[in-house]
Length: 531
Image 1 (cartoon, rainbow, N blue to C red):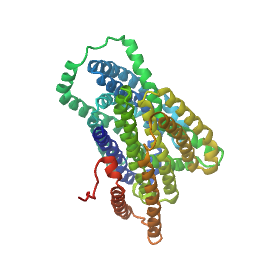
Image 2: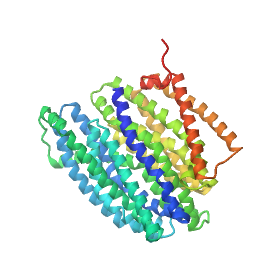
Image 3: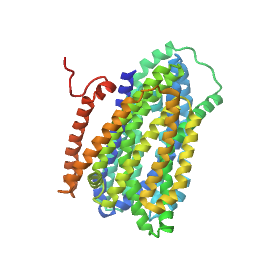
Image 4: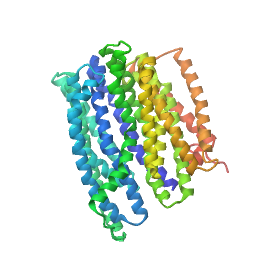
C-alpha cells in the first residue's frame, strides 16, 4: 500500500509540480518581452484566465475525480466491464459539458470583463474569447485522465499534464516573440495568442493520452475478459449517477477558483468606491496580490494535489471494503507527506519572497510583501484541498459541500471589511481565514471517524521541526539582507538557487537525523543505519 501511494504521488507530483513550475518559469522571458507593459499584460491575461479556470473547474473538476472513485470501486469488485461502460457514457457527457461551458463562457465574457480589475474592458473580453475553444475540448480529455487515475495508473495523468504545459509554454513564447518583435503589434494581441496557447497544449495532451491508451489495450482486454458480466443499467440513471457523484467534486474542486474569481469581480469596486483608488491603481494592486502570487502559490498547492489525488482511489478502495485499519494508515501517511512537503516549501519561498518576486516579475517591496502574505495563505488552501479530498473519498460529499458553503459565505462576509482595513492584503487575509476555518471543521470530522490516538505523532514532529527551521532560516536571511540585497534577476536567481540548495540539504539531514524519513518513506535519504 505504501509503495502504491509513494509511486502514485511521484507521478502526480512529477506532472503536476513540474508543469506548474514550467508554468511560472516561462513568465521570466514572457514578461521581459512585454517590457513596460508587463503589469497591464498580466492583468489582462489573469482577467481572462481566472474565469476560464472557474468555468473549467465547473466543467471538469468533479467528473474525473468522480470516475476515478467509481472505477476504483468497480475494479475492487472485479467489475471492469462496468468501468468501461461508465467511461463510454461519461465521455459523451463530458463532450456535451464542454460545449455548454464554452458557450456560457463566451456569452458571459463581456460582463466578466466589465467587473474585472482592468482598464480596458474590450481587451479582457477578447482575451476570454480566445479561451473558449479550449473550454470545449478539455473536459473530455480530463475524463480520460480520471479513468487512468481510477485504475491506479498515475503516470499518464502526470506526464500528460507535463506535455500539455510544455507545448503551451512553447507556443506562448514563440507567438509573443513573433507578435511583439517581428510584427510589432500591441501587447494585447500577444496576450490573446498567449491565452489561445491553452488550446494547442490540450491537443498535445490528447495525442499523448490516446497513444498511451493504445499501449494499455492488451491489459484492459484481459481485465475485461476476466471481469464479471456488466450490470445493465438504464442510460439515464447512469448519467444521473455520474452527475450526482460528480457535483460535489465539481463544487469542492472549484472552491479556490471561486474565491479568486470573487476577488477579481469585487476588488476594483471596493478599492475605488471605499478607498478612493483609481482604476489604474486597482489594476496594479490586483496584479500584485492576485495575478502574480497565484502563479507561485499554485506550485505550493500542487504539492498537496499530487498527494490527495493519489490517495483518492486507494482510500475509496479500502473504505468500500470497510477496512478501517488500512483507511487509518492511508490517511495518516497522506497527512504526513502533505506537511513534510508543504511546510518547507512555504518556508523557503516565504524567506525568498523578495528574490522570487524580482526573478519572475519585478523588484518591488509592496509586491514582495503581498507575495509573502499569499504564500502564508497557501498553507490553508493546501490543507483544504487535502482534507476535503479525504472526506469525499470516504463518500461524505454532502458534508464537504456544506463546509465549503460555510467557507464561501465567510469569505463574502469578510471581503469588504478586510479590504477596507488592509487593502490588497485584506483580500488575501479573508481567503486565508475562510479556508482555515473550514479545514479545521473537516479535520475534526476526519479525526473523530478514522484516526486512532497517536496516529499523527509524525505530523507534530514535522510541524515543530519546520517551525524551528523556519526561525533559523529567517534569521540567516535577515543577517544576509542587512549586508546585501540583490536587485538583478541573474544575481537574485543565483542567490535563491544556492540558498534553496543549502536549505534542502539541511532539511533532508534533519529528516534523517530525526528518523522521519525512515518512518514515512521506509528508508533514510543520506544517513545509513549503523550495524
